[in-house]
Structures are given as C-alpha cells and as structure tokens.
Length: 304
Image (cartoon, rainbow, N blue to C red; front, side, top):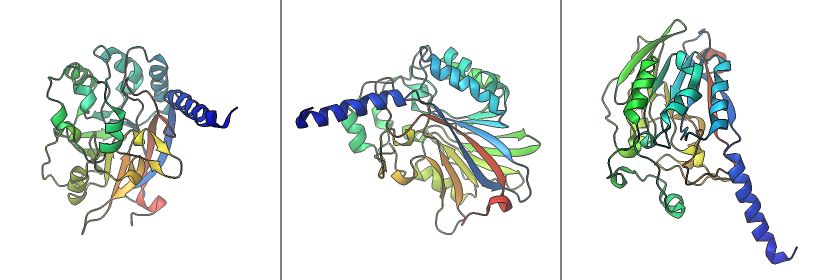
C-alpha cells in the first residue's frame, strides 16, 4: 500500500469500528458503599439514553435479557425515544423489568425527535452548553404516552418530583428533576430524608448546578446519564466532550462529587445505550447498562 493511503485506510477502519461498536452492548458492574453499615446488598440497574427506534431489534433483545439479572430496583435516566413510533418498542425492550420497582426522569430526546446536526458544533461546543435555546419547536415525541405506560407499571415519575419506594424491605427516598439540558429542572431545597434507608437524586443531565444542589442537601447517591460517556473517546485521553458542564474525567462511571463544607456524594453517570439516528458511531465507548451493587459503608470503606 502506498504511504499516502495509510491515513485513508486507518480512517476507514476507525469509522467501521465506531459503527460496529454501537451494537456491542455491555453490562458494567460497580459496587457503591453507600448503605448503613451491616446492610444487605441492594442491586440497582441503571438504564439511560436508549434512543430507541422500532427497527433496533438487537438492542431490544439485549435489554430484555437484563431481567435475568433480577435487580431490586431500576433507575431510568431518560432519552428513551428516537422515533415517533418508538414507545411500543421501548416497552417491549424493558419487558419484565417493568415488573421491578423503578423510577424515571426524561431527557430532551423524550420530548423532541432527533435532528441532523453539524458534528463539529458538538465537538467544539459540547462542554457546558445548554440546549434550551435551540428547542423552540413544539415537543413532538409521545412523552406523555411513555409517562403513562411507565407509571402504569408502577415506576415512579421523578420529573421535578419527589418519590419513595420500598425495595427489598428498605425505604428509598428520591428527588428528581426534569431535563437540566433543556433547563426544565426545578431545584427545591428539600434536604435528604434522614429517616430513609437511602436518599437518591435522579437527573438526566449531570449539570453542576444539580450535582452541587443535591450534595449540599446531603444526598449520598446521584444517578444521571446524557453524556454518552463522550461517545467518541481517545485512548489515554478519554472523552472529548460531555455535552454539559461536567468535567471530561467524569463523563462516565462511578465518581464522587462534593461542594465546600459538605461530605462527598457518590455519583454514577451512565454512558448510555444508544446514539442519535444521525450520529450512529461510538469509539472506545461501548453502549452500556450498569448494575450497581449498593453495600454497607463498612464493607468497602467510606467516602473520603
């Protein structure tokens, strides 16, 4: 091969891999020492950014298989839809998981169908830029149909709401917000319920104003999605963008978050399961769901 063709071949191989990676669904497993000392483990399945279209049968089958994990709780952090007719496909994909106690919030792609965008704008302006000013059109996705369906299965709607569930004999308290990326979030000064076995903050997009708010109010655990883990990650460098004001080092996975004078909160950011139909590529960032095993603090050490 001529030397000048090597860059072309490398670029073609990278593109082919990044397209194939969108179907390499991966289950992550992490342990979070966040319960009271001596507590039995609690298994939480975190789903996010499914971006479902009716024809994505492989993704639907993989999601259906997650019921075999027998989680105690499902937390869905939004962006379920990517098509006007996707609600039946989403419900079919979640399958038996809908019979598990669950909570949910929405993201922008539960309200607005995806549009073609210049990818350069995403890479150069995807850190700390809200989309509120770009969504002047009327919400066209069937989010109310999705809301009714999820709530009808007993999942708790946390869009700018509080909620609680009894899960495996434990009382869990939740505070949720509607999508911060659209500036739909309403932050209310509700301190974490100290009488609950665990208080959890749930959001779609992990904007710092939301993370800071819940950390100051004493929430030990915060769950979010939205970032796609950066979607395109460079080996040794990591995510190029987070599409919010969260730093790139915490674009996915389990980290801590703290504000001055407060104990740190655990924060898990899911890299999500899908992509926009107009940007079906992932690189070094496989689509994922995460099984979080919550344990007693004394079993793995406390936050520092």
